[in-house]
Length: 241
Image (tube, rainbow, N blue to C red):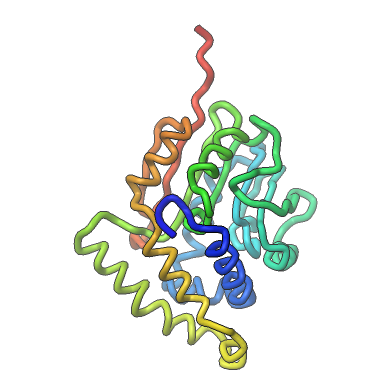
């Protein structure tokens, strides 16, 4: 597992861990972000226009999808268990659930206006292939938006965030998950969160991944409290010359 992705076995282990925490996913995220996660989701959702066709990759239980106001939304999720849970939150008249992975998106070329990855990009097993797929399905002028846990360059902020992930997230997660549920787990699924955070590339690496896939105007900004970053890139218009 490194900044480019992970093995299929590592990915399958990660998916099992995600399904174990699924029923408590939003409660845990609210605690470990000190209530900021939904504010981040709402802010990012505003990037999509109502008339856009939107693809969300790694949509999970639908906690970001529910904030999108677009007329046509595709949610791509590898876990049938998490996708089923999302049905309680999404508008089935506007949202189509697709089962699959970001490395092989089941949509035709140039078919969507926006692609969102909300706290899912670090979980992809082949980030380069996923970036290329995002570029393929976007229309010219379309935009990709990747939001994930902040991992800044070495310095005071990086040390503070690493301390939070390593020493505060595990106990906060234990508070959010009932004891009986924790006792059923064969292992602590949040150990894998630490592994994906350690392996997750820096902002610069992810910007390079998008640029190498053909995106232009690639840039990153911190969201509130600097606990998460938002990286954006556009699919260039084709030259008419």
